[in-house]
Image 1 (cartoon, rainbow, N blue to C red):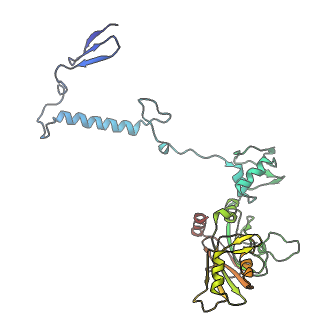
Image 2: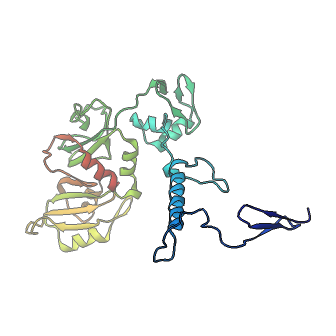
Image 3: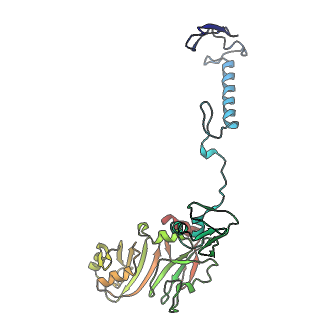
Length: 327
């Protein structure tokens, strides 16, 4: 095709060239030929112009509203953001989460358990990470049937002479005896308080939260009220802040101050993030101080307010939200 000319109704002509392109030549401006006649506005635009413009806007808006395109964007088509798509229902629970919710361990530890080949779904061994548990599935771990439990968080104000363990072969009193009626789910203590230390101790079946609270990198804040046998000097407080040498390395407090107005030099408040075993007692002992009483009064935003010694409470939604925000 070497070229040609096409004339339309409006009198415009389109001349085709051999390249396949065409050029439109207008003969006059007949755009208002079919428009309603009438006076022009002060801005110089006729009512017909404004009518067509309003009609175009209406059509464009309707197209966007009623004819959204779902799927991969194609040239010349409208696309829709993912956030505008209708929500897709989530079916099933990841196996590691199911195990963690059963109170066995954290999700990360559950992945290792799954890979070891001791977890089965409906009597079939599963080692593939990311496998989902569907409603009605039976999950077993080492031959024991697991039940995905509701997550529970219980705070105890621990008294003296109770050890922090789930079971004691010597039949000593354990903290589990104090919270045995707190809930029907199996819960475990997060961290430890030694036998003679009192104060806040958290119990839960949330393996992920327990892992975060005990891992050093999360630096969970704790505050202790320390009673010593003799006066603690200002230099002792300074040493606690600068760090003292222990058998397992240096350890320091974030804050160390006298309790109250400072009149009693045998009472000190210590804030730290370390979770090492008996770390507060060992720090004071390294400075030549015998600790008579040690009470944990603050744990990751939780306090002993309205919680008498030896009593427990289930965390409120507000307390739980604050705890998870901190951890």
